[in-house]
Image 1 (tube, helix red, strand yellow):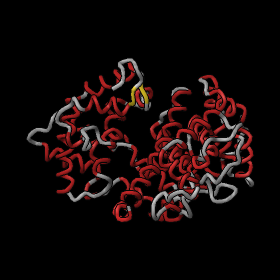
Image 2 (tube, helix red, strand yellow):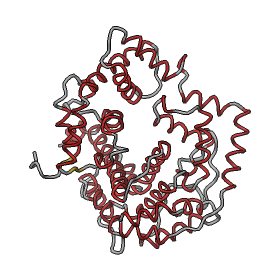
Image 3 (spheres, one colour):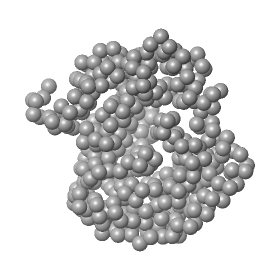
Image 4 (tube, helix red, strand yellow):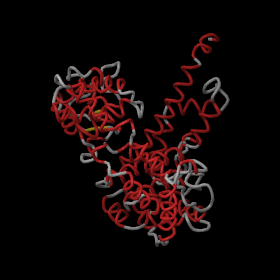
Length: 436
């Protein structure tokens, strides 16, 4: 425990408050705290509403903010107990209806909270209510939103029209002048004033649209070097030196590059993010995505494109296997890299490269490649997060929100790699014990 006035880890604040709520075992992990998916699908978006209160989503909270977080969670205790009870009914009815689409927690946690909000604790008609809610969510006969999307795009009449419209919008957008000074100023200052100038400019879109011109990747690389002081590695944005028109259907994708993902893949992500009662018809979702695809960096809102441009110029400094970033790199980028470089598994990997001991007995090459390509993984996760913001119409409120967003994406990327290392070690543990 820390002193009452000291900063606290958000995870510890949530765990302590959660321990005071009874009857939520199905939403809890083995140690009694909330499951990661409970936080992601219920607590953050529905109870705390971190999109509207980003200060409550930061990894470290001061005493006042920690108290506010705990108070909001405990104030919703009755509804959370009802959510847990509804989840049990939904799981049972899902099996009865033979529904297999989606992860059961991803699908049913938000729906259980919705039922708890509308009906309170389950009553005598709970089974029928849960079954009806699942049918509404997935559609009669199991036709989920994804199935509707697949059928819509596979119809030859729609496919030809949408492909033509995608190309028309792509080529109708003209290159824009960019204000590199605004981007450099925010990287250096990280101030609210600098953020407002950058967010209100067309710089993010302009840099993204520039990638579509001949030599676009090289031109962006020069801008990145000018601001970050480092050459740009392969960031996984596109296959060639200019962005190709993304395909309409996922089957026509030629790689995993961020800016060349199909419209179908992007709309599938939208369907995962939006609850059923907030979804527009599939036709409208596809049309919205065509508009985003045509925008710079595939993000419709200029402020979000600016956030991604920030990520692009910070990414070359994220080289945890090299240790500290060199002199001349912006301070924010240096801090982000240090955040990962001091992780225990990264230090272990650096020792492995020095020849002292293997990182793991077998999958060293894959894990080390992931670490070497940390910048690419970071940008992929950042783009997905920003696309979700775009779909919901969310924007960072100020410079602190932008810093927290980027810092959080770096941390989640690092945690993913840490989990990979842990799994590899656990899988190989019997062999390691045999030779120890």
